[in-house]
Image (cartoon, rainbow, N blue to C red; front, side, top):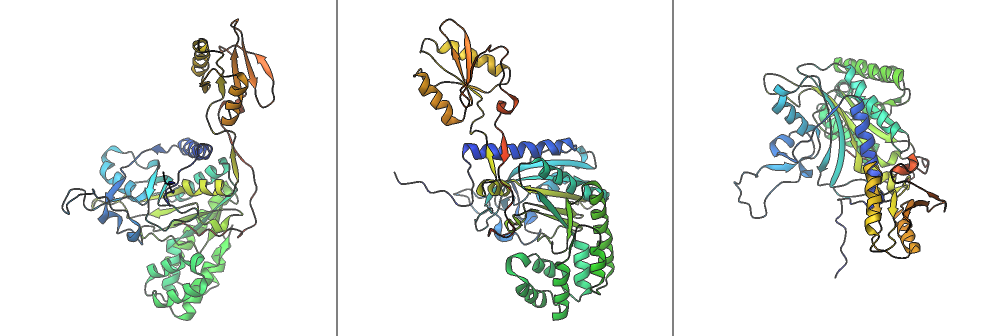
Length: 456
Protein backbone atom coordinates (compact mmCIF):
# COMPACT_ATOMS: atom_id res chain seq x y z
CA UNK A 1 0.00 0.00 0.00
CA UNK A 2 1.32 3.45 -0.87
CA UNK A 3 2.34 5.69 1.99
CA UNK A 4 -0.45 8.05 3.05
CA UNK A 5 0.70 11.66 2.81
CA UNK A 6 -0.61 14.21 5.32
CA UNK A 7 -3.11 16.74 4.04
CA UNK A 8 -1.47 20.14 4.34
CA UNK A 9 -3.25 22.69 6.52
CA UNK A 10 -5.39 20.23 8.49
CA UNK A 11 -3.56 19.47 11.77
CA UNK A 12 -3.90 16.11 13.46
CA UNK A 13 -2.13 15.67 16.79
CA UNK A 14 -0.60 12.51 18.23
CA UNK A 15 -2.01 11.45 21.63
CA UNK A 16 0.57 13.29 23.74
CA UNK A 17 0.13 16.39 21.57
CA UNK A 18 -3.63 16.14 21.86
CA UNK A 19 -3.25 16.16 25.65
CA UNK A 20 -1.45 19.49 25.32
CA UNK A 21 -4.30 20.85 23.21
CA UNK A 22 -6.91 19.52 25.62
CA UNK A 23 -5.21 21.19 28.59
CA UNK A 24 -5.14 24.47 26.68
CA UNK A 25 -8.85 24.11 25.92
CA UNK A 26 -9.72 23.15 29.50
CA UNK A 27 -7.75 26.09 30.89
CA UNK A 28 -9.32 28.53 28.44
CA UNK A 29 -12.82 27.26 29.16
CA UNK A 30 -12.23 27.45 32.92
CA UNK A 31 -11.08 31.09 32.84
CA UNK A 32 -13.91 32.11 30.53
CA UNK A 33 -16.51 30.53 32.80
CA UNK A 34 -14.85 32.04 35.87
CA UNK A 35 -15.68 35.45 34.38
CA UNK A 36 -19.29 34.53 33.66
CA UNK A 37 -19.17 33.84 29.93
CA UNK A 38 -21.78 31.33 28.74
CA UNK A 39 -20.80 28.73 26.17
CA UNK A 40 -22.59 28.45 22.83
CA UNK A 41 -21.98 26.67 19.53
CA UNK A 42 -23.10 27.89 16.13
CA UNK A 43 -23.55 26.04 12.84
CA UNK A 44 -20.50 25.52 10.63
CA UNK A 45 -21.97 27.35 7.60
CA UNK A 46 -23.20 30.88 6.94
CA UNK A 47 -24.65 32.58 3.84
CA UNK A 48 -21.88 33.81 1.58
CA UNK A 49 -23.50 37.22 1.22
CA UNK A 50 -23.11 37.72 4.97
CA UNK A 51 -19.49 36.62 5.14
CA UNK A 52 -18.18 38.35 2.04
CA UNK A 53 -19.10 41.85 3.16
CA UNK A 54 -16.81 41.80 6.17
CA UNK A 55 -13.38 42.57 4.70
CA UNK A 56 -10.59 41.00 2.64
CA UNK A 57 -11.65 37.40 3.13
CA UNK A 58 -13.50 36.44 -0.09
CA UNK A 59 -10.59 34.44 -1.53
CA UNK A 60 -10.32 32.35 1.64
CA UNK A 61 -13.90 31.15 2.09
CA UNK A 62 -14.66 27.48 1.46
CA UNK A 63 -17.96 27.06 -0.38
CA UNK A 64 -20.32 24.29 0.71
CA UNK A 65 -21.62 22.21 -2.18
CA UNK A 66 -22.83 18.66 -2.66
CA UNK A 67 -20.72 16.68 -5.13
CA UNK A 68 -23.53 16.28 -7.66
CA UNK A 69 -25.46 19.42 -6.73
CA UNK A 70 -27.41 21.46 -9.23
CA UNK A 71 -26.82 25.19 -9.27
CA UNK A 72 -30.16 26.09 -7.69
CA UNK A 73 -30.11 23.60 -4.82
CA UNK A 74 -30.82 24.95 -1.29
CA UNK A 75 -27.19 24.75 -0.15
CA UNK A 76 -26.00 27.04 -2.95
CA UNK A 77 -24.59 30.23 -1.50
CA UNK A 78 -23.36 28.72 1.76
CA UNK A 79 -19.78 28.73 2.99
CA UNK A 80 -17.86 27.35 5.97
CA UNK A 81 -17.37 30.12 8.52
CA UNK A 82 -13.90 31.72 8.53
CA UNK A 83 -14.20 33.12 12.06
CA UNK A 84 -16.65 32.96 14.97
CA UNK A 85 -17.57 36.65 15.16
CA UNK A 86 -19.74 36.84 12.04
CA UNK A 87 -21.72 33.70 13.03
CA UNK A 88 -22.10 35.12 16.54
CA UNK A 89 -23.55 38.38 15.21
CA UNK A 90 -26.11 36.37 13.23
CA UNK A 91 -26.84 34.26 16.35
CA UNK A 92 -27.51 37.40 18.40
CA UNK A 93 -29.94 38.77 15.82
CA UNK A 94 -31.72 35.45 15.51
CA UNK A 95 -32.05 34.92 19.27
CA UNK A 96 -32.20 38.47 20.64
CA UNK A 97 -35.62 37.89 22.17
CA UNK A 98 -34.25 35.02 24.27
CA UNK A 99 -30.98 36.62 25.43
CA UNK A 100 -30.29 38.82 28.44
CA UNK A 101 -28.12 41.83 27.59
CA UNK A 102 -25.30 42.52 27.93
CA UNK A 103 -24.79 39.00 26.66
CA UNK A 104 -21.47 37.38 27.55
CA UNK A 105 -20.58 34.33 25.47
CA UNK A 106 -17.63 32.09 24.81
CA UNK A 107 -17.34 29.82 21.82
CA UNK A 108 -14.71 27.16 21.06
CA UNK A 109 -15.06 25.72 17.56
CA UNK A 110 -13.37 24.83 14.31
CA UNK A 111 -13.14 27.44 11.55
CA UNK A 112 -11.92 27.16 7.97
CA UNK A 113 -9.86 29.43 5.72
CA UNK A 114 -8.49 28.63 2.27
CA UNK A 115 -5.04 30.04 2.97
CA UNK A 116 -1.64 28.83 1.85
CA UNK A 117 -0.65 26.42 4.64
CA UNK A 118 2.59 27.09 6.47
CA UNK A 119 3.97 26.77 9.97
CA UNK A 120 1.28 27.92 12.38
CA UNK A 121 -1.20 28.79 9.61
CA UNK A 122 -3.88 26.21 8.85
CA UNK A 123 -6.91 25.70 6.63
CA UNK A 124 -8.85 24.10 9.49
CA UNK A 125 -8.17 25.28 13.01
CA UNK A 126 -9.74 25.82 16.41
CA UNK A 127 -10.54 29.25 17.84
CA UNK A 128 -11.64 30.19 21.35
CA UNK A 129 -13.61 33.45 21.46
CA UNK A 130 -15.20 35.65 24.09
CA UNK A 131 -17.55 38.49 23.21
CA UNK A 132 -19.73 40.90 25.13
CA UNK A 133 -22.70 42.32 23.21
CA UNK A 134 -25.34 44.82 24.34
CA UNK A 135 -28.42 46.38 22.80
CA UNK A 136 -27.95 49.85 21.23
CA UNK A 137 -24.97 50.86 23.42
CA UNK A 138 -22.04 48.93 24.90
CA UNK A 139 -20.18 50.30 27.91
CA UNK A 140 -16.58 51.19 27.14
CA UNK A 141 -15.15 49.32 30.15
CA UNK A 142 -15.85 46.02 28.39
CA UNK A 143 -13.03 46.86 25.94
CA UNK A 144 -10.64 46.68 28.88
CA UNK A 145 -12.34 43.65 30.37
CA UNK A 146 -12.01 41.26 27.42
CA UNK A 147 -8.30 42.09 27.07
CA UNK A 148 -7.66 41.38 30.76
CA UNK A 149 -9.65 38.13 30.67
CA UNK A 150 -7.47 36.92 27.80
CA UNK A 151 -4.33 38.11 29.64
CA UNK A 152 -5.48 35.95 32.56
CA UNK A 153 -5.85 33.00 30.19
CA UNK A 154 -2.26 33.36 29.02
CA UNK A 155 -0.98 33.56 32.57
CA UNK A 156 -2.79 30.30 33.36
CA UNK A 157 -1.45 28.45 30.30
CA UNK A 158 1.87 26.57 30.07
CA UNK A 159 3.31 29.01 27.55
CA UNK A 160 5.80 31.88 27.32
CA UNK A 161 4.62 35.29 28.59
CA UNK A 162 2.20 37.07 26.28
CA UNK A 163 1.65 40.77 25.59
CA UNK A 164 -1.66 42.01 24.24
CA UNK A 165 -1.03 44.84 21.75
CA UNK A 166 -3.83 47.39 21.45
CA UNK A 167 -4.71 50.14 19.00
CA UNK A 168 -7.90 52.00 18.11
CA UNK A 169 -9.42 52.12 14.63
CA UNK A 170 -10.72 55.65 15.22
CA UNK A 171 -7.22 56.78 16.11
CA UNK A 172 -5.75 55.15 13.01
CA UNK A 173 -8.47 56.27 10.57
CA UNK A 174 -8.53 59.78 12.01
CA UNK A 175 -4.76 60.06 11.66
CA UNK A 176 -4.81 58.79 8.07
CA UNK A 177 -7.56 61.24 7.14
CA UNK A 178 -5.74 64.07 8.88
CA UNK A 179 -2.57 63.16 7.02
CA UNK A 180 -4.42 63.49 3.71
CA UNK A 181 -5.64 59.98 2.88
CA UNK A 182 -8.47 59.79 0.36
CA UNK A 183 -9.28 56.22 1.45
CA UNK A 184 -8.69 55.50 5.15
CA UNK A 185 -9.72 51.83 4.76
CA UNK A 186 -7.03 51.34 2.11
CA UNK A 187 -4.49 52.92 4.45
CA UNK A 188 -5.53 50.51 7.21
CA UNK A 189 -5.11 47.55 4.89
CA UNK A 190 -1.67 48.79 3.86
CA UNK A 191 -0.46 49.26 7.45
CA UNK A 192 -1.81 45.80 8.30
CA UNK A 193 0.76 44.40 5.83
CA UNK A 194 3.73 46.17 7.47
CA UNK A 195 5.24 43.11 9.13
CA UNK A 196 4.80 41.03 5.98
CA UNK A 197 6.11 43.30 3.21
CA UNK A 198 8.12 46.01 4.96
CA UNK A 199 7.97 49.79 5.22
CA UNK A 200 9.02 50.66 1.64
CA UNK A 201 6.26 48.61 0.02
CA UNK A 202 3.69 49.82 2.55
CA UNK A 203 4.66 53.44 1.78
CA UNK A 204 4.08 52.75 -1.92
CA UNK A 205 0.64 51.28 -1.15
CA UNK A 206 -0.24 54.27 1.03
CA UNK A 207 0.47 56.55 -1.89
CA UNK A 208 -1.07 54.46 -4.69
CA UNK A 209 -4.10 52.98 -2.89
CA UNK A 210 -4.87 55.46 -0.11
CA UNK A 211 -4.02 58.65 -2.02
CA UNK A 212 -1.44 59.93 0.47
CA UNK A 213 1.44 62.19 -0.44
CA UNK A 214 4.96 60.95 0.19
CA UNK A 215 5.12 63.12 3.30
CA UNK A 216 1.75 61.84 4.51
CA UNK A 217 2.82 58.23 3.95
CA UNK A 218 5.94 58.78 6.06
CA UNK A 219 3.84 60.25 8.87
CA UNK A 220 1.63 57.16 8.78
CA UNK A 221 4.71 54.94 9.03
CA UNK A 222 5.94 57.06 11.94
CA UNK A 223 2.58 56.50 13.65
CA UNK A 224 2.94 52.75 13.14
CA UNK A 225 6.32 52.80 14.90
CA UNK A 226 4.88 54.07 18.20
CA UNK A 227 4.62 51.54 21.00
CA UNK A 228 4.12 52.30 24.68
CA UNK A 229 3.18 50.49 27.89
CA UNK A 230 1.67 53.71 29.28
CA UNK A 231 -0.25 56.72 27.98
CA UNK A 232 2.89 58.51 26.79
CA UNK A 233 1.93 57.44 23.24
CA UNK A 234 -0.59 60.31 23.20
CA UNK A 235 2.14 62.96 23.19
CA UNK A 236 4.15 60.97 20.64
CA UNK A 237 1.17 61.04 18.27
CA UNK A 238 0.54 64.72 18.87
CA UNK A 239 4.18 65.45 18.04
CA UNK A 240 3.59 64.21 14.47
CA UNK A 241 1.45 67.29 13.84
CA UNK A 242 -1.66 65.58 12.42
CA UNK A 243 -5.12 66.76 13.51
CA UNK A 244 -8.60 65.29 13.05
CA UNK A 245 -11.66 64.97 15.34
CA UNK A 246 -11.74 61.18 14.89
CA UNK A 247 -8.07 61.03 15.91
CA UNK A 248 -8.89 62.92 19.12
CA UNK A 249 -11.66 60.45 19.95
CA UNK A 250 -9.45 57.43 19.28
CA UNK A 251 -6.58 58.80 21.36
CA UNK A 252 -8.91 59.36 24.29
CA UNK A 253 -10.36 55.85 24.08
CA UNK A 254 -7.01 54.10 23.70
CA UNK A 255 -5.52 56.08 26.59
CA UNK A 256 -8.44 54.98 28.76
CA UNK A 257 -7.87 51.31 27.85
CA UNK A 258 -4.14 51.47 28.57
CA UNK A 259 -4.57 53.36 31.85
CA UNK A 260 -7.21 50.94 33.13
CA UNK A 261 -5.22 47.88 32.09
CA UNK A 262 -2.06 49.24 33.72
CA UNK A 263 -3.93 49.69 36.98
CA UNK A 264 -5.29 46.14 36.94
CA UNK A 265 -2.55 44.07 35.31
CA UNK A 266 0.67 46.05 34.65
CA UNK A 267 2.53 45.06 31.51
CA UNK A 268 -0.18 42.79 30.11
CA UNK A 269 -1.58 45.34 27.63
CA UNK A 270 0.59 47.64 25.49
CA UNK A 271 -0.35 50.35 22.98
CA UNK A 272 1.04 49.49 19.53
CA UNK A 273 -0.12 51.85 16.82
CA UNK A 274 0.70 49.62 13.86
CA UNK A 275 -2.07 47.17 14.84
CA UNK A 276 -4.80 47.61 12.23
CA UNK A 277 -6.76 44.33 11.79
CA UNK A 278 -7.82 43.63 8.21
CA UNK A 279 -11.52 42.91 8.75
CA UNK A 280 -13.78 45.87 8.07
CA UNK A 281 -16.24 45.32 10.92
CA UNK A 282 -13.92 46.65 13.66
CA UNK A 283 -14.78 50.21 14.72
CA UNK A 284 -12.83 50.94 17.94
CA UNK A 285 -10.27 49.14 20.06
CA UNK A 286 -8.40 46.35 18.25
CA UNK A 287 -6.12 43.69 19.75
CA UNK A 288 -3.30 41.42 18.68
CA UNK A 289 -1.12 39.27 20.92
CA UNK A 290 2.53 38.24 20.80
CA UNK A 291 4.43 35.60 22.74
CA UNK A 292 7.52 37.19 24.28
CA UNK A 293 10.60 35.79 22.54
CA UNK A 294 8.52 34.46 19.65
CA UNK A 295 7.31 37.72 18.11
CA UNK A 296 8.01 36.54 14.57
CA UNK A 297 5.39 33.82 15.05
CA UNK A 298 2.85 36.61 14.69
CA UNK A 299 -0.38 37.15 16.55
CA UNK A 300 -1.85 34.19 18.46
CA UNK A 301 -4.87 36.12 19.71
CA UNK A 302 -6.77 39.04 18.20
CA UNK A 303 -10.07 40.88 18.08
CA UNK A 304 -11.71 44.22 18.67
CA UNK A 305 -14.75 46.42 19.05
CA UNK A 306 -17.54 46.30 16.44
CA UNK A 307 -20.59 48.57 16.48
CA UNK A 308 -22.58 47.72 13.35
CA UNK A 309 -21.95 44.03 12.69
CA UNK A 310 -25.30 42.99 14.20
CA UNK A 311 -28.31 45.11 13.28
CA UNK A 312 -31.87 44.23 12.27
CA UNK A 313 -32.88 47.73 11.21
CA UNK A 314 -34.68 48.39 14.50
CA UNK A 315 -31.94 47.68 17.04
CA UNK A 316 -28.18 47.50 16.83
CA UNK A 317 -26.08 45.18 18.97
CA UNK A 318 -22.57 46.57 19.43
CA UNK A 319 -19.96 44.23 20.82
CA UNK A 320 -16.33 43.64 21.64
CA UNK A 321 -14.51 40.34 21.47
CA UNK A 322 -11.14 38.67 21.41
CA UNK A 323 -10.20 35.32 19.90
CA UNK A 324 -7.42 32.90 20.80
CA UNK A 325 -6.02 30.88 17.90
CA UNK A 326 -5.82 27.58 19.77
CA UNK A 327 -4.34 25.57 16.90
CA UNK A 328 -1.70 28.21 16.20
CA UNK A 329 -0.73 28.44 19.87
CA UNK A 330 -0.54 24.66 20.25
CA UNK A 331 1.53 24.35 17.08
CA UNK A 332 4.01 26.88 18.49
CA UNK A 333 4.20 25.15 21.86
CA UNK A 334 4.78 21.77 20.23
CA UNK A 335 6.86 22.87 17.25
CA UNK A 336 9.29 24.86 19.39
CA UNK A 337 9.52 22.11 22.01
CA UNK A 338 8.22 24.44 24.73
CA UNK A 339 5.92 22.00 26.51
CA UNK A 340 5.80 18.36 27.44
CA UNK A 341 2.91 16.14 28.48
CA UNK A 342 3.66 13.82 31.40
CA UNK A 343 2.12 10.93 29.46
CA UNK A 344 0.24 10.26 26.25
CA UNK A 345 -2.80 8.55 27.81
CA UNK A 346 -5.19 9.51 30.60
CA UNK A 347 -4.54 6.16 32.30
CA UNK A 348 -2.97 6.34 35.76
CA UNK A 349 -3.09 2.61 36.58
CA UNK A 350 -2.68 -0.59 34.59
CA UNK A 351 -4.13 -3.59 36.42
CA UNK A 352 -2.01 -6.65 35.65
CA UNK A 353 -3.63 -9.96 34.73
CA UNK A 354 -2.06 -13.05 36.25
CA UNK A 355 -4.06 -15.53 34.15
CA UNK A 356 -7.09 -15.65 31.91
CA UNK A 357 -9.04 -17.05 34.83
CA UNK A 358 -7.94 -14.12 37.00
CA UNK A 359 -9.04 -11.42 34.57
CA UNK A 360 -12.35 -10.97 36.41
CA UNK A 361 -10.51 -10.08 39.63
CA UNK A 362 -8.42 -7.54 37.72
CA UNK A 363 -11.52 -6.03 36.14
CA UNK A 364 -13.10 -5.73 39.60
CA UNK A 365 -10.11 -3.69 40.75
CA UNK A 366 -10.35 -1.47 37.68
CA UNK A 367 -14.06 -0.88 38.31
CA UNK A 368 -13.40 0.09 41.93
CA UNK A 369 -10.69 2.56 40.93
CA UNK A 370 -12.76 4.07 38.12
CA UNK A 371 -15.68 4.55 40.52
CA UNK A 372 -13.43 6.93 42.45
CA UNK A 373 -12.36 8.84 39.36
CA UNK A 374 -9.03 7.10 38.73
CA UNK A 375 -8.42 6.36 35.03
CA UNK A 376 -7.61 2.65 34.82
CA UNK A 377 -6.91 0.00 32.18
CA UNK A 378 -6.72 -3.76 32.46
CA UNK A 379 -3.70 -5.38 30.78
CA UNK A 380 -4.58 -6.70 27.32
CA UNK A 381 -3.17 -10.20 27.97
CA UNK A 382 -2.00 -12.41 30.80
CA UNK A 383 1.64 -12.19 29.80
CA UNK A 384 4.64 -12.29 32.12
CA UNK A 385 4.53 -9.42 34.58
CA UNK A 386 7.72 -7.95 33.14
CA UNK A 387 6.07 -7.68 29.74
CA UNK A 388 2.97 -6.08 31.25
CA UNK A 389 5.14 -3.54 33.08
CA UNK A 390 6.96 -2.72 29.84
CA UNK A 391 3.57 -2.23 28.17
CA UNK A 392 2.62 0.29 30.87
CA UNK A 393 5.99 2.03 30.55
CA UNK A 394 5.68 2.42 26.77
CA UNK A 395 2.25 4.02 27.23
CA UNK A 396 3.47 6.28 30.03
CA UNK A 397 1.21 4.69 32.67
CA UNK A 398 2.90 5.35 36.04
CA UNK A 399 1.36 2.59 38.19
CA UNK A 400 0.82 -1.17 37.78
CA UNK A 401 -1.60 -2.97 40.09
CA UNK A 402 -1.16 -6.63 41.05
CA UNK A 403 -3.77 -9.01 42.45
CA UNK A 404 -2.10 -11.91 44.27
CA UNK A 405 -3.50 -15.46 44.32
CA UNK A 406 -4.44 -15.02 48.00
CA UNK A 407 -6.56 -11.96 47.16
CA UNK A 408 -4.15 -9.32 48.47
CA UNK A 409 -3.28 -6.27 46.42
CA UNK A 410 -0.19 -4.21 45.73
CA UNK A 411 0.63 -1.31 43.44
CA UNK A 412 3.99 -0.49 41.89
CA UNK A 413 5.29 2.89 40.83
CA UNK A 414 7.25 1.74 37.79
CA UNK A 415 9.30 4.94 37.71
CA UNK A 416 10.81 4.47 41.18
CA UNK A 417 10.30 0.73 41.51
CA UNK A 418 8.54 1.18 44.85
CA UNK A 419 5.78 -1.41 45.45
CA UNK A 420 3.34 -1.14 48.35
CA UNK A 421 0.26 -2.95 49.61
CA UNK A 422 -2.93 -1.23 48.50
CA UNK A 423 -6.69 -1.35 48.85
CA UNK A 424 -8.73 -0.61 45.70
CA UNK A 425 -11.42 0.97 47.90
CA UNK A 426 -9.11 3.67 49.28
CA UNK A 427 -5.80 3.91 47.36
CA UNK A 428 -5.25 6.94 45.15
CA UNK A 429 -2.23 8.12 43.16
CA UNK A 430 -0.52 11.41 44.06
CA UNK A 431 -2.48 14.40 42.76
CA UNK A 432 0.13 15.11 40.06
CA UNK A 433 -0.30 11.59 38.67
CA UNK A 434 -4.09 11.44 38.68
CA UNK A 435 -4.26 13.04 35.23
CA UNK A 436 -1.67 13.90 32.60
CA UNK A 437 0.03 17.22 33.21
CA UNK A 438 1.56 19.65 30.75
CA UNK A 439 4.60 21.65 31.77
CA UNK A 440 6.58 24.45 30.18
CA UNK A 441 10.04 23.00 29.62
CA UNK A 442 11.85 25.82 27.82
CA UNK A 443 12.10 29.58 28.14
CA UNK A 444 11.67 32.01 25.24
CA UNK A 445 14.34 32.26 22.59
CA UNK A 446 15.66 35.65 21.61
CA UNK A 447 13.26 37.65 19.47
CA UNK A 448 13.30 37.08 15.76
CA UNK A 449 14.99 33.69 15.62
CA UNK A 450 12.19 31.94 13.76
CA UNK A 451 10.58 32.77 10.45
CA UNK A 452 6.86 32.28 10.82
CA UNK A 453 4.57 34.89 9.34
CA UNK A 454 1.89 36.69 11.30
CA UNK A 455 -1.73 35.62 11.36
CA UNK A 456 -4.90 37.51 10.77
